[in-house]
Each structure stands twice: as C-alpha cells, then as structure tokens.
Image (cartoon, rainbow, N blue to C red):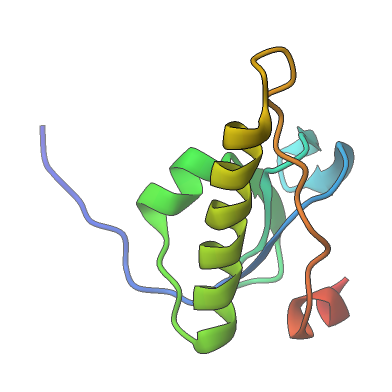
Length: 102
C-alpha cells in the first residue's frame, strides 16, 4: 500500500471546557470536555481527542507552546489529586486570538 505524509499546514485550536456540538462538513459532531476544537485551513471546524492532537500537531508559537504545556501540567496535577474515583480533567479557559475566530 502506498504511504503518504500530511503536508505542513497551520491550524488554530483550543481545548473545550464543556461537551458541545458543532456543524462540520460531514454533519453534526460532538466534542467532549478536554477535546481540541480545530479551525482548519479552509475555516472548517472539527474536534480532535487530546491524545491524537498531541501525536499529530505541534505548537508553532509561544502561545501554542504555553497552551500545550499548561494543559499537560493541569492533567498531571489533577491525576495526582484524584483518589481514583474522579479522574476527569477540567480544562482551563483558553486565552488569546483563537477565541476571536468563533
């Protein structure tokens, strides 16, 4: 089977605070707390699970680096504080220009 690689493109993304639903090119899509809401190269919007996002994307500016670092630190802190029954990550509000896209 032939192999392909994604072209380097720039996207805007932020983590969502509460589950929500958006209209995508393929129909309605539900995002869960902690997912990344992505605005693609043509303005299309979609959700991506945190694990997949971190494997697929990398920050290209200081704001992106800070968002990735701080969200990971909060996940680790939350896991340390949990006694086992509540292991859900509560994301912090996003800052900066991405919010202006909505």
